[in-house]
Length: 280
Ligand SMILES: NC(=O)c1ccc[n+]([C@@H]2O[C@H](COP(=O)([O-])OP(=O)(O)OC[C@H]3O[C@@H](n4cnc5c(N)ncnc54)[C@H](O)[C@@H]3O)[C@@H](O)[C@H]2O)c1
Image (cartoon, rainbow, N blue to C red; front, side, top):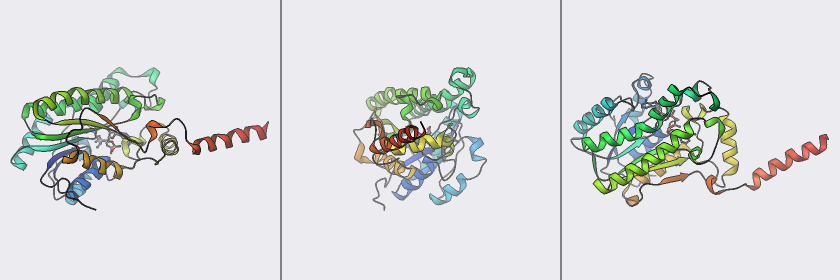
């Protein structure tokens, strides 16, 4: 179903690694809704080559490599994007996350602090860099929309999420602070979407992800929001229907964040208790 929600709009999508990525699904939905795109990812991710498949699907969108922690790379990305479109852009999706501590299985009580700095730089400070360079290079058009993806571990503890929780808390704070600045300067809105656990490369890198996923599924009255659902929500937030939404962390989680316990989980726990009584 297409409604031309993004007709005439142009934007940059960071973070499409493969066809499971939230950014991949978003690029396709944004294109279907009439947007023109530039795709970008870290040079190491581009070497996988999959993004070329995506580019073909979305109207041969240019692929411009950029490590989102490098100011120089972001400056070059914006320069080439401006040349390609012959002007500014209307939206940016920051769909980037990585923790070397999580990847290497370091426990929260045994964090490597160089890794922690990398986690924060890649997963949160890069969002500030993306916006600061956007402001300085004046690439954003008025009434534009900038989004990053977060997770509820910014507000509540999920032990295996480790230092990514700190990264997401920082990311959400950066969205508020830059959201204020961009709103005053150029009427640009900045938000984060707090997404359900989703089966992607970054998601399944978190220890015990399958349990995470099924727990959230049972705790969400609507079930977990899929990557496709997330892409649809992002399209709406890039559209002119959400021009006054800014500086928000928007829950996209099937109701998870408002639930104490669900009937489904109570039934599961009762079965476990019954099993214990039978054994004793
Ligand atoms: N999957 C989930 O369960 C889930 C839930 C909530 C939020 N999120 C967030 O959604 C976003 C997208 O993740 P995803 O689940 O689609 O996984 P993904 O693995 O498909 O995407 C992560 C992307 O980050 C990119 N990246 C890593 N380091 C980079 C760097 N230095 N410069 C530029 N790009 C870099 C990777 O190349 C990859 O494309 C992340 O911010 C993630 O934390 C994911």
